[in-house]
Length: 97
Image (cartoon, rainbow, N blue to C red; front, side, top):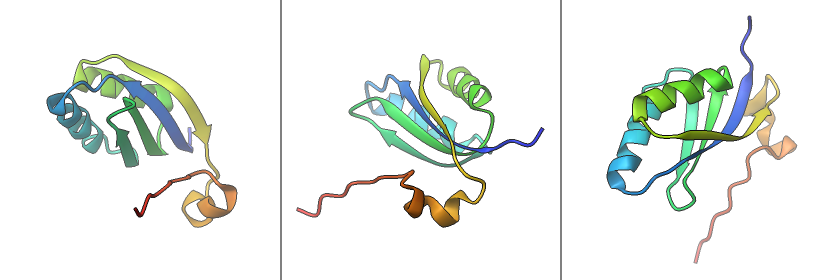
């Protein structure tokens, strides 16, 4: 079975810097993930890559020993890196002030 490119938003409770470090190390050790964003204040993690969403959530749960909730899963187009700005999949707001 060919796996598809996904963007998945997870809720993982991140209380302290130790929890943040544990989640970060778990994400870095999962080969299927191309990139990730950890939002510490809102306890959300966004992961991108070619993977099976449920398998990645289970791996994160086992490695961090923390509860993992899948909030949203988006299947992105096969040529995602080239056209992500046209489709509006990734919206990152920056504050220059």
